[in-house]
Image (cartoon, rainbow, N blue to C red; front, side, top):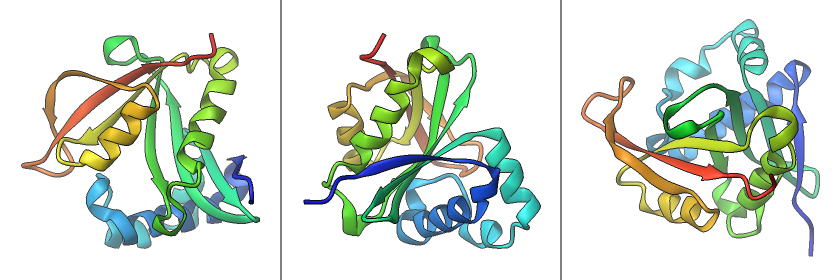
Length: 165
């Protein structure tokens, strides 16, 4: 059986990040705050800027990109030291350990990058994602919050302390 590996993406890898992000929006656009049509029009410079703003991480299986997430250092709600975003695994490759591998990468870098307390937001009706995050140790915190990107929608903040501290 193949093993999921994780690679950090840099600005040089902007096309990989772009392709993963567009795939995420095409397959599961309702799970994200982004807009497929708008992001398809982003220029190379915009994708490179995103690569500088976040730490991008890709999950690979047999050399193929199958998942992605971003991590941003911040001082956030409930003590979060980083915010996880754009977390997605290609539906064809779910339940093979890609999500866990992505968070293992974050945990392995928790001390050196100040990612010890991880936060994320998930739509309140995305029960599959909420359950997956809870299996990884995330806990729902605070009240649901209105989305600034998608009026009428609400997200739930979830927090997790890295098990590697």
